[in-house]
Length: 580
Ligand code: GLC
Picture 1 (cartoon, rainbow, N blue to C red):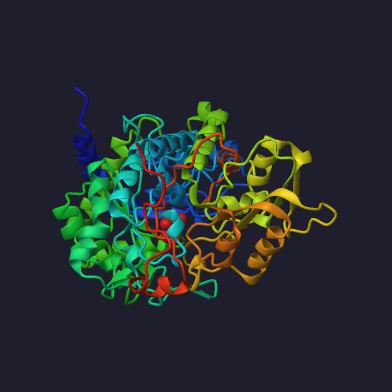
Picture 2 (cartoon, rainbow, N blue to C red; picture 1 turned 90 degrees about the vertical axis):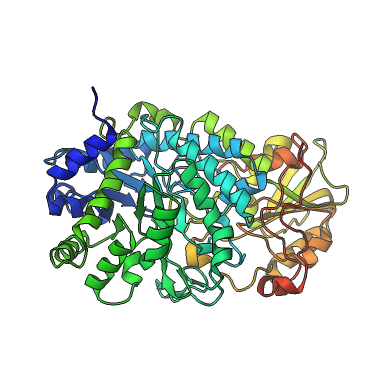
């Protein structure tokens, strides 16, 4: 009779030394780990933070890198495998050649749980090929301020939509059999109320940059916290999530990483969460007191695995001292280790801990790219159409302007190869311009990023694509979401040359469009479409209809951003075609 997961957990736990238990609670960043230390400290987890790719950055070298850490772990006394984690938040997008799907804001616009399930499943397969069975996704935040740099990581402003798509994502990652070789542990994040922080309350300074709202403080009442921000976690727990990441943010001045009532009494007690809680990147360092006090507060609050992420030796020594001093009860450590081991055993990690190399050919495969292109098509939101769309395929000439029309880095956004993303040909794929040329042929497309078409003369159609520069987290906190004077003058200049003007906005959140909206005959929100930009042309030229519905309100002026109660949005959340 095969031992149950619980029996195997208890057998391991009773055999573990205190040092091995503390090791299991330790999550270290892969560049910080000295050779042999994965085994020496019996680390429970290793991660690649944003941009944590091997050189060369290929699926195979990812598999080799991850297998190196895993082999060390499997050579330890108790052969407990590590969980290797990464932020595959829109496909396994840290890996060159992986399929880069639209960010969650676009998936929220498409609003289809089945589509999200299929995307998460495809992401899991590409991750399993590289031996990574733990995804720090989905973000299930409900953003209330569009100026937040993580708005694009969110499915939308409606907690029910976020819950539905969050559940689909968890189920897609974990698959129908959590113990299967292509199952990946989901990590709904960031618990709780990261999207409720108020503007100007962040105290985080990173790389010399002061964050403005990211990691800030939320002051809403408990009823609102529960009805809006807790709701997606109830749903995610119900869908089988085995790990939840805790937020950097705070609620009424208390950091989530030390919020015992919410982490233990509410999440683990009232909601019955049986998985494990992982801290965010150095999140415990933001707690009051010295390091000893921070470690004690975090673990006693209910954190089970600590994303240190650098000095894992110091964390281990401090945690050992804390237990020996009686500051952290051994029972709390045992509970943490039980939760971690339970997740690893339930995932089948002891049975298949290594990369599924036979799946390496699936990374960036045609089918996944076709799925991504479908998602791009279905994410597009039509904000205006004065008879301009769909465009005729026999149009003799189209002027295409705007840097964002021909830049894969811009259309992918943050968390793509690099943590912050990067402009330029950062991944293989198709730009919006390439998609238009695929439809018309290059001879009928004139492209200039600055809208300079000297000698071209008038054209029947002009398409201006405006985009955000890639960013992630607080680096994207932006006081105002308005177009620059340069962007508006680009729209003006192309307007003067064409009969029909289409404006496409490539951004992770709505922008105040002002005069550009009035000048255009059609306006399309394309969000952050990822590697398959050709999906935009599919809809502009009528192959498929617009079906996207706004996941967020679309502001008509800047004052809406600071005082949404003072004026209605230009378009409310949900704006878009009725769905059958
Ligand atoms: C980051 C993010 C979190 C991510 C983690 C690991 O700071 O807040 O979403 O999962 O670190 O990269």
